[in-house]
Length: 309
Ligand code: NAD
Image 1: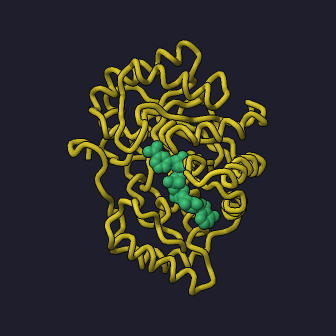
Image 2: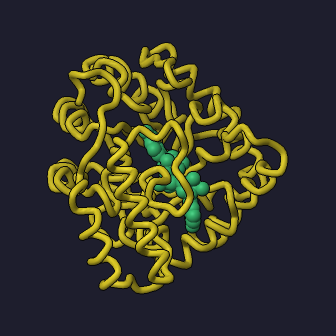
């Protein structure tokens, strides 16, 4: 496993990291044991960065992750969670709510500090509130020793520029903007580097559209994007290859991105994901797939308030 510096935090994070959102899935029992094993397999294979949120499974992902982490020494992982988003349509970025939220998360996770606290999907709020109220409240928690670093997350890249121009943040977490079909995050990297902000990329499989399985019904990508991604997946299959492998390898190769978060509650998939990044990428397959995806390159969707997109 390769480890990379996370902005100016002094932390070194594994190039591939673990996203715990699938631990919040509503299919229970068996999945929970598998999910716990997926966490342990990831850590055993060298992953040291884990991302979660109270939103995932409406607190369930944090609770299951907490069970998995109780058996693991605290110095083996860098733990990131979030504040501000609590369901599909419940957002509260107020100082009072985010302050209480950190205590609730620590309790569910069974930890005495959180390494990275992030404002979750900030584009659903007003960015001026994030700058003037949410981030200062999180900095107070940093002074109190409850959190070590403070970051922001969301979909529209424009909102990262807006907030990092006006407030100090340690990291940004962008998703669906550095994978085979969308590399728009690369355009933001020089600005973030200049500001000393660590760049975290999530969803190398573009939340499941770069996959042989059909994407979930809620997937927000436009229909033609899903269609062309499915064509690329079928092409890989016809060559005896997995688009998932190509996708994970592609996202991790860029050294400017500190870490890429992939989510799975399946220990075998996490074992594969880590193995794949140690193997050389098939350059011919990559070129062929990029050609198929070219018509939809960087085609995205809106998220949150119109003015933040
Ligand atoms: P992803 O691109 O990682 O895709 C996940 C899907 O791919 C899941 O259905 C999973 O089962 C499947 N998968 C994973 N490995 C596989 C393999 N080897 N073979 C076949 N299928 C495989 O998207 P994601 O789960 O949305 O994102 C990853 C993580 O990033 C999340 O868990 C979360 O922690 C983080 N994230 C954060 C935000 C945010 O903060 N706003 C948004 C998106 C994602």
